[in-house]
Structures are given as C-alpha cells and as structure tokens.
Length: 515
Image 1 (cartoon, rainbow, N blue to C red):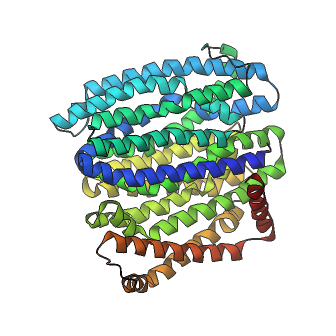
Image 2: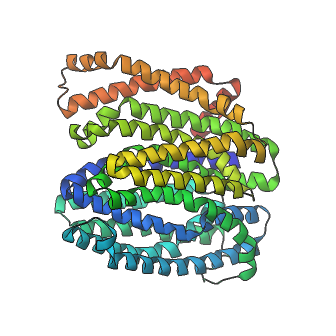
C-alpha cells in the first residue's frame, strides 16, 4: 500500500474513532453525572488525570519506536527491529511496575494530596487500586501498537481500537440499567482496553513472523535510539504536564465541581483536540519514510498542503461547535451550565493551534528537536503558573486562560523562528495560504448564522416545536449546524485550487473503487 493511501485510510479511521469517542463522551458525561452525582463523577476525572500523568514514564519511547521501526523496516534492517521490540518489552515491563508503585504512594496519601472528604477519598483509593493493576498490563503491551503502526497500518489499529470503545458503551448501559457502583463501572471500563491485545499479537505474527515476544535489554540498540528518545521526552514532558496537570490543579486549588466542569467542556471540545492531535500519529510513519528517503517534494507538500487540509477540518469543527455552543451545552447537561459558554468559546479558539500537526510530524521524523523542547518548557510552565494562580478566583476559567498563554507562546515560536530557521519552511505561506483563509471562512460563517439565530428559532417554533423542550432545542441545534455546514462548504469550494479539486476527486474515486 502506498504512503498516500495509508495516510488517507489512517485519517479516515482516526476520524471515525474520534467521532465515536466524542459521541461516547458526549452521551456518557451527563448520564454518569446524573447517575453518580457531580462530585462523585469528578473523582473519576481526578483519578484518570493522576494516572494519565504517569504516562510521562514513557520517556518518549512511543514516538521514538514508531520513527525507528518505520525507518528500519524501510531500509530492510530486520535485526534491529527484532532487538528494539524485545528491548521495548523489557523497558515497558519495568515501567509498568514502577507506575503501579507510584499509584500506590498516591493512594496511601490521597487524603492529604487532594481536596476530598472521607467518603470521596475512599472511592478515590479504590479507583487508584484498579489503575495499579491495569497499568502493568497496558504498559507491557503498549509497544505492540507501535510496531503495527510503524508498518503503515495506522488504519488497522484505529479500526480495531473501536472494539474497546464498544465494550465501554456496553458497560455504560449496564451501569445505568443495573445500577452498578462507581467502582464496578470504573473497573470494567478500565479493563476494556485489553480487548484489542489478542488482535495486535495476531497481526504482528502475521506481518512480522520473525518478532519475538520475549523481553530483553539490548544495550547497543538503546544507545542508538536513546538520544532521540530523550529529545522527544524533553519536548513532551512539559507539554504533557501542561495538558494533564490542569484537572489535577483544579482538584488541588479548586473544587470537585470545577473538575466536573472541566470534564464537561473537555468532553465536548475533546473531539477537536483529538482530531488535531491524532494527525501526528497518523502521519509519523509516512513522514519518517519521507525523511529517510530525503524526498524534498513530499516534504514540502506535507508542510503546506497537509497543513491546509488539516486547517480546513479544524476550523470547521471549531467554528461549527461555537455556532451551536449554547444548544450543545443545554442538551448536554442543562441550561444551568450556560455560565460555561465564555470559557467554552475561548477554549475552542485555542484548539486552532493544532493546525500545525502535519509540520509537527515532520519535526518528529527528524533528528534535532532540541529547540522545540525549550519552547515547550517555557509555554507549559507559564501556562501552568497562570492556571495555578487563577483557579482560586476563576475556577475552570483559570485553566482556560492558562491554555491561551500556552497556545500563543507555542504558535509565536513556530511561526517566527523554528519553521523558518530550522526547517526551511516559509511561515508566511503556512499562515496566509494554509491557515488564515479557513479561519476567516469559519468566522464569517459563524457571524452569518449568529445574525440569523432568531429567525432560525422562529422557524423551529413554526414547525411546531417548543424551544423550552429538548426536541425544540435539538431542532435549533440541527438547523444551525446544517446552515453552517452549507455556508462553510461553499466558502471552501471557492478557495479550492485546481490541484485541490483533483486531489479530492481522486479520493472519491478510490473510495468508490474500495466500496
């Protein structure tokens, strides 16, 4: 399968997976808040945030393995692939045990670390205990997925990742119908992630039969990949800390209700963040191949056109969600949460920063990423300090303001320095050709729909719907969404170049041939 086709299929299945995740999150959050209560549901968010932060123990091996596995497979260096995989099993097995120990320490001191009462602390301890066991299994098997992705089978991985999500949906239904406890719900949901493991093992044995699943540590391989690995780690540790310490800070500086507010907004906006962030993982195997082959034409197509196509999607989701924000929040958790709208809109604007994922995949496919480590450190520290200081006064607003500072610092660094100086990519072309036209299109469409918001509501009433009921609110949401989509599609069509039209026509032909 060609790299372009692998990317297209990867994007397709990643989008489907993200939509399913978003729908699940959208439906599950209000149902679970109603079932367990807002404060108790906040405990789930807190426990998950603590464990997610433990993923820093990866030390950059995730992206490193995909990058090196892809490069070695391209160059036929099978022996290195075998040794690196076994070394990864040994490394991740050790990390899994260490993760469990850290969670045990947090469990023993949870009452002093977090702002929880006695009953909440008991539940939190149970959830952390569940995470201890699952951490060992998930860490040890994490390199299975990395190896499959390195063979440019990202689409296959995303397709089978739907299986655990289907199990989680079944658990959600069972929780609501059988009145399962929060601990049982969390146990079943957490261990649903292992459902994909047998399929990964079967896929590896079929495509790479020479791979051994016996863990070991190969020192020469470690020496070869460790410098790149540490560069990735130094870059990701601050970025990862920023994204995952925010709900933890809310639990320490704010209230459990604020943690729940965070989960509500993140559940809605998460689809956009996941979509933007997922492109790096989809593109990395192919960009590693491009860099290994020194294909300059493909390099610049990825930078300019890849960013353009990602910007089209990101801007659509961002401004479409902003258009129907009040309706979404009302349908999601009720009118009493409309106070979150200002922070909701500001958070959405920050998601536009993920338009650079195509170039980010090129950065990670290279060898020198030290400069972006410094930028990430500054942006993350500033964002976290602002969040910590503002949470007592603004609660959820404190972390959103911190996100604004983080995004601005990162974007200014990339546009004004890194792309131009380190990658020979013209920042002006990226901004004016690949990004700004789609932002302007989204803003214009948002403005038009906002101007006609009252007529839309009147039309819904004429159709016999009551705006005070969910049916009427859903119709307003549906009609505003349709109008925005049609307007935005029209704007995009006018912006498409002949090359773009040829590209999309070829995609449609491939889809029809496959079907």
